[in-house]
Structures are given as C-alpha cells and as structure tokens.
Length: 342
Image (cartoon, rainbow, N blue to C red; front, side, top):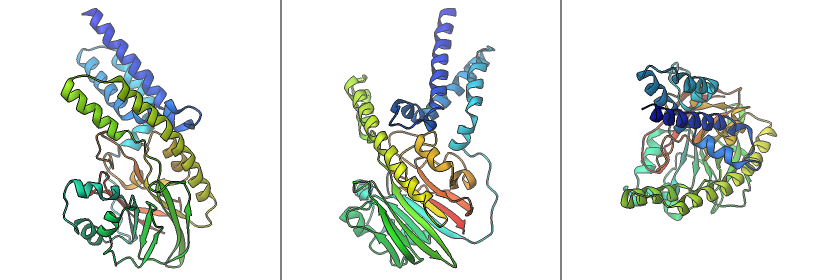
C-alpha cells in the first residue's frame, strides 16, 4: 500500500511540475520555445487533475494535499481567466451589440443537415449592430448569409475568410495580410454617433490538431491502443502552426498600437487564455468575457473539450455592458456577443 501511495504522490509531483511550466507559456514567444505553449494549452486539464489529487489526499487525511493547493494558488489568476464565478452586475445603459462568430465555412451546417435559413434567421433575430465573421470564404456559407440586408455596410474581400457586417458606416478600411485566405484579418474605422472606432475581425492560424485528435480517439475506441505516429503528427502540426500564429499576433498587435481610435477586436484566436496569444492582447485591452461573462465561456465544441479560443477585446476607454456565449450549434464554434458603450 505504501508503494502505491508513493507512486501516486510521484505522479502528483509530475503534474504539479507540468502545471508550473504551463504558467510560463504566456510569457515566452513560441518562436523561441514552442513546447511551453503546448503546456499552456493543457493547463485546464492540469488544474482538474490537481483538484482531483487534493480531494484524494484530503479523503485520506494526508498533508500531501498541500502540494497541489500551493501550486494552484501560485497561478490562481489563471483560474479567473478560465472561469468567472461572480454574476456580473446588470447594466441598464444602452450600447452597441457586437457578435463574433466563426462559421466554419458552412461545413457544420452541411454535415448536420441544418435547413437553409436557420443561421441567417438567428443572426437577424439576435439583432446585433455589428457582426464579426470568420471562415466565410466559401460559396456555400456566402449563400447562407446573403440575406443579411439589415447590415448596410459590409467589409469583405473575395476569398478572404474574415468579414465585418455593420449597421454603421465606415470611413476607412484595410486588410492585414497573413498570406493566407481562411486565416486573415480585416479592419475598418466606423462612425458610431460622434465617435470613430477601429474594429477588427480576425482569424489566427489554427493548431490543426482536432482531426488528428479525433483519429486517436477512434483508434482507442476501436483497438484500445494509441499509435505513436498520431501523437508525433499532432506535435509536429502544433509546433509549426503555433509559430505561424505568433507572427500573425505580432502583426495585428503592431497595427492596433498605431490606431488613432479606440479599438474593438473579435474573432477566432485559436489559443486558450493561458497562452502567448492571449497575453499579447490582454496586456493592453479588456477581455469582455472576464469583465461581464459567467462560467467557463467555452467557445469551441470540437473533440478537445473546455476550450475558450474566441474573444472580444476592447480598448480600456470602452465600457463593457454585457457579454454572452450562445449555445446555438451552427458551427464547430459558439457565437459570442458583447454590448459596449463607446
């Protein structure tokens, strides 16, 4: 029994070390050390395992529980970026409503045989003032959203995946070139009352590991084994793509810092809160979910659970009135909405 206890405690120590390593992920450029980014991605699972160890040791009346308690407390501010447990105050002020939604190029609609018009009706009924859309660079999804006539101003580029649909006029527009189609960033300076606001719709490079993760799960269910080549494939893809994403993040951040106006940026960032990507924006902008959200704010419904990778960030001088994550399933992402006052 003592031997088993030692083995369990050794595993607890390893998980605590991994957790501490994950705390470093937001501070290191993946182009210098990409492995830390992978630990940051795994942080929610390290946190969960630590909590299970605490329960186990407390149940056994062991002081070993303090190890995981101390490790969690050392990075406790990360818990607040994963989970908001305080119900935000209701703000009765009227603002502008913004939705950010990755539409998955319409593949989800097609695979789930969702009737044409449902997505369009949702976007109309939800009545946002501005839609920040990603992965709309297919004829299928363009056909799905062609009836959004309530938005008199549309910023889009043929074959580019990001777009902005607005009820407010723009006075300037542009595109940050990622040398890609689906992953892209489009922006515009919009006149909202007497104010001008620069708004971005962005889709950073994906890790492209979801399909491989699904294959691993399928093999485990069918053959009860894990093939090492699939694990190597996931790590190789992750390494290459996280480096590309870091460069895209630098491009967008530099562009934002030169903006003469307050900024709103929303989209699919493809990174969790414990990441270099998130920290680069959270350092000087407000995360609408942290200010007015509730719960985990999970925005991705793929095979990898507990991921919040879609964000709405706004400048400090913009007041966030409300934030919600919708559970509608018209994509492999969930739509996120915020109401803000300029």
